[in-house]
Image (cartoon, rainbow, N blue to C red):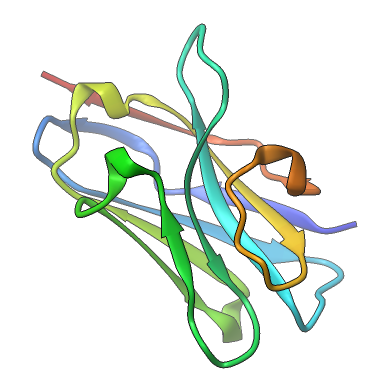
Length: 126
C-alpha cells in the first residue's frame, strides 16, 4: 500500500504564506501524478493543484482561484510534493489533502486518484 503523509499546515494571518509537504512511501511506480485537494466544513472536496511525476517534461494544473498564488513543485529523490501558498485569504481555510494516481495524465477529478493522505489543517485568520 502507498502511504501519503501531509505536513506544514497551521495558523496564518491573511496575506501570509505556508508551504505544505506530502511525502510518499511504500510501493512507487515510475509514472504517477501527485496533487492537492481541499475541503472546508460543509463543502465538497475540491481540486487545488496537481503535477506529473514522470517523463522529464513537467506539467502542472491549478484551480482558477489558486492561480498566481499557489505553486506546486516536486522532489523526485524524496518522493515529495510541495504546495507553496502565498497571499492567503480566509476563504483558503480548509483541510488540505495530498493524493496520488497512476499514469502521467494530470486530472482534476478526485475520483481519478487512488491514494489519499489524512489531511492537514490550514486556518487563515482575518
